[in-house]
Length: 341
Ligand code: AQP
Image (tube, rainbow, N blue to C red):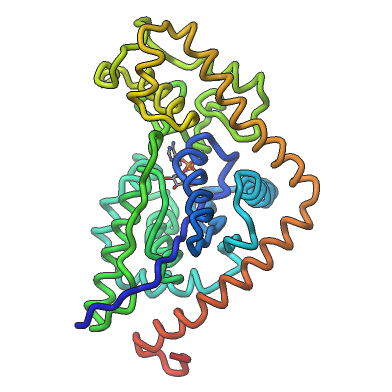
């Protein structure tokens, strides 16, 4: 087989499954904007079909999808530069996902930590969609021949599974048709943890609102959540090594480093020896300073949902222009009569 080179293309998505969190922002969105501003070809999706793998109230889903789009725009994504759309409006995602359902193996899916975490002890009662989630995610990425996938640490395993699907498809059909995409996991906060429990990821769907900072929180709420964040009684150490056994302290320092765009070592040099009673207000001020412009812009954008819908509609058209020929070529490779390969 000859070495095929693919044009670099960035793809990623976020589920409209609740309010955007600081974890989504630091783990994913901040990097989305940087990659766009580096002049790369960038495609960012609101993965509404993924969101419904667990129950979503229809009115909440509609609001969350528009609010997610507002969050993308407020964080700095420009619909003239990046393609922004919601997944359900590009039917090629589910069409390619079906092909990948037939490529991926049950054992691969059963090993996924997100499946095990979200299905919990009652797997028999989880949706089939939740089990097949990674095949749809592989379709999201490979439908655009995307090569670079900015994600938080928790999604690394799914990007690896996407690579396995691409490799198996290419081997099965004897063609280097799909690129083997790379996860891009960068920054001081690739895994932001819950403010209430340093062993759990900060998550949109955590039942406790105090566990996370939402991008829509006002300044007082952010300050209160940080003030009440779980910590330990010791002062902060002056080196990162001293945080190894202190999950909650490490989390707050990582958040501070990511928001202030410093390394953890630089932060430790400044805050080492301080008590949390001194450090938490510093963190709250920084978080408010960085997040307030985003939440204010989100609120402004949500005042005109017709403009958001227009951006999403235009984004879906542009996405389909790329996706449709790749799906047709996939169908042709697989042997579907009538495919326009
Ligand atoms: N806590 C986090 N730290 C760093 N990155 C995170 N991401 C999510 N939580 C953190 C990254 O945000 C992107 C979008 O995530 P998603 O909405 O597709 O799904 P998720 O990873 O399951 O995020 P949530 O907030 O936990 O959603 P729910 O509660 O609905 O499951 C991804 O790149 C993810 O890594």
